[in-house]
Image 1 (cartoon, rainbow, N blue to C red):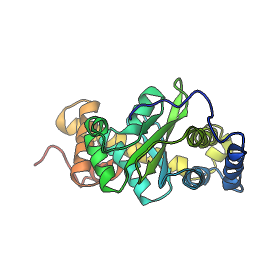
Image 2 (cartoon, helix red, strand yellow; image 1 turned 90 degrees about the vertical axis):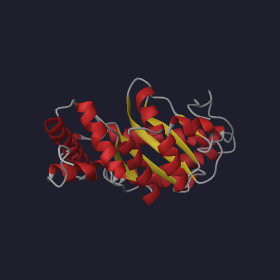
Image 3 (cartoon, rainbow, N blue to C red; image 1 turned 180 degrees about the vertical axis):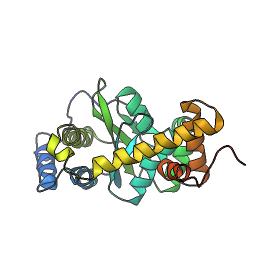
Length: 248
């Protein structure tokens, strides 16, 4: 099912200390981690704690989500794919601030809603995607996306643990001290640089074709997908003048 909201309470598993053990695992996973390491560490913790095979975290961008960290190659590819397509569970979460639990990507509802993403995810061995907001419906700063090779939903306790990880991720991203942001930690400055390249490429395509920003970004995304590139890779081709849109 798509667009399912979590239950009203933490659900089963609370009384026997399972949730407390999850809290301890999150704390242990972050022990000794600097700001640049925290997102990747938390992706790994999510995979360890939950019946999922991969996790990625993406930040909200002006025009598209920006992948920050992933637990492995498949998770990284699917996060980049959603950015490239401009579609997928991550985008719904960024628009609404509400979780999306896609229990089986072979369901007609998923195939109809995200035809290309669902097909590509299934081709990568992923059957279910659980996308959670970082923040709230009022202020959503990004998403935590969980990928499972098996269809099915999360139990109430598992969903509560996933929301715990998303909550800690949100704090890690929004409560960075200014000195950490300015100390050359790399991940924030690297994201900003990549985002700037996409904006620069969009501006160049606008000038080449005489179109608006939305159309230019759509052209860039389409070109990236057609050539099996990420949006950033396609943008670098444009910025470095290896690709023009006003020539055949």
